[in-house]
Amino acid sequence: MFDLTAVQDALKEFQFDGWLLYDFRGSNVLAQRILHMPEGFMASRRYLYYIPAEGQPQKLVHRIENDALDHLPGDKTIYLKWQELEAGIEAMVSGGKRIAMEYSPRNANPYISRVDAGTIEMVKGYGADVQPSGDLISIFEATLSEEQLQSHYAASVLTNEAFSIAWKFIADGVRENGSVEESAVEARIMKHFEDNDLTTYHPPIVGVNANGGNPHYETGTGEVTTIRENDFVLIDLWAKQKTPGAIYSDLTRTGFVGTEVPEKYVEIFNIVAASRDAGIECTRAKLAAGEPLQGWEIDDAVRDVIDSAGYGEYFCHRTGHSLGQEVHGNGTHLDNLETHETRLILPRTLFTIEPGIYLPEFGVRSEVDVYIHEDGTPEVTGGPIQTEVVPILKDFPA
Image (cartoon, rainbow, N blue to C red; front, top):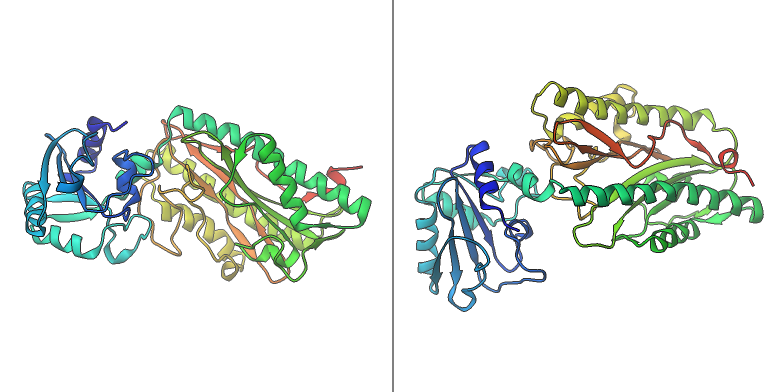
């Protein structure tokens, strides 16, 4: 339900005069969610909703879709001609100076850059100082309700269990048949999800040896997809409950098909684990000190560990992403590689920390989910943090 008071409080907190939400034919999914547009809603004409920091919101809608925003508070202006549209926009923003929109200068953050350049130019032409709405998006798109948090916890219990099921499936298959296919392990994980009423937008990654060195490997498509004794296996899995608004759990762990893990795997895993833990500690320390924390800072803390160990060129993606109703959510990411993420880490938000080192022979990624409580305390969810490569045949005997 749209909460005008909460939005206006946030505008004042971030020193905005107003927030102009614009959408054309589904171009701005963020605006649709902020405005609680009906499920499956698709307008064929432009609509805008202006929320001032104080006072009543204003609606601007086309004559043939004049009821598009009727579920929201505020005064309505109906346009037909393009001249009326532009005049309506000018009237909306004329009283404001610093206005938030889904915009990013130089498209530095494409996750929030949802309004076309021409519309931004028009609004600026009416004297408005247009600024990114990124932190507002994080507040109203990425903060979790208590019900959503509980759905994440419930999914986390089952995703954590999925690893034990997968490791045992591998151990049993190798002992009984000498090998097991990546795709069979994937299918076993998916059965676990289905048996427990979980859903996922895409099956998990199961990568043996060199396949795990591809961060977005598609299970079963490598040159060699058979898992045998003395192989190294990476599993990345994600799922959520089959209920509206449910929140994903997203975890990655690694195992070795043997009883003792060779040193070459231990060495790389320990570097990755240390970098992951540095990200957790950076989050904890800055929030405990009451200091603002931006996404890029955690990425730097994590990346510094891998860079210092001499493996920086093998860490080829951002440190983590917002986690929500989608695996890659719309809140603050942990990134100073692909983008310079200046959005804040906010209370009641959830994100992953998932550094990796991807070598030609194998890849190691260690992924945890981190929830920030209202008081700024971070909580790592999803079961115990992995502290060593799983010796699969030792930990899962016949």
